[in-house]
Image 1 (cartoon, rainbow, N blue to C red):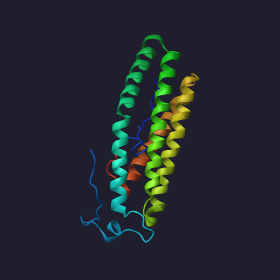
Image 2 (cartoon, rainbow, N blue to C red; image 1 turned 60 degrees about the vertical axis):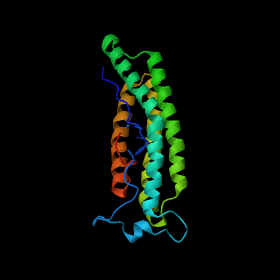
Image 3 (tube, rainbow, N blue to C red; image 1 turned 135 degrees about the vertical axis):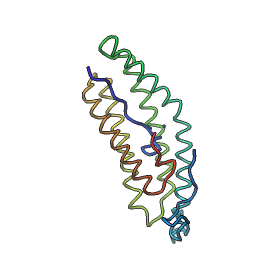
Image 4 (cartoon, one colour; image 1 turned 60 degrees about the horizontal axis):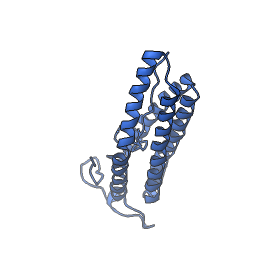
Length: 188
């Protein structure tokens, strides 16, 4: 039997689901904040530097809040792997605990994503930030699909969902880092 993979959970990018606050400002390649990074848009939205700083603060709070659940997921994963090794399968109780804990992580992360979205990115950056948010939402869907497959004893499907979700989470973190996030762009 193939070992079950657990999806990486962080708030996609701070879905830290799947893990230090960084600098509160973004810098241009020359090392200093550019006018575009520090000037607020005409709509009264946050500047890019302000948005990154506030978003990273949300991500740091999310990471701290999620840590006990992430620790619990790791413990349950070790338990599941032990059961697989000893009995060739994971017990229904462990599957249920994994799925429930994963659902808690996702529910918390969804609330934190709503907080990030409510910050409102700078108008000029909306096209760069929206894909990050969309990928995070896709990660939530994948995490729920993983939990459902796990409980239904569909281990091959759970494995495929986890592998795809983990790859997408890495891509999301890369997008977030390229945008300028520090904490939100860190990998778990």
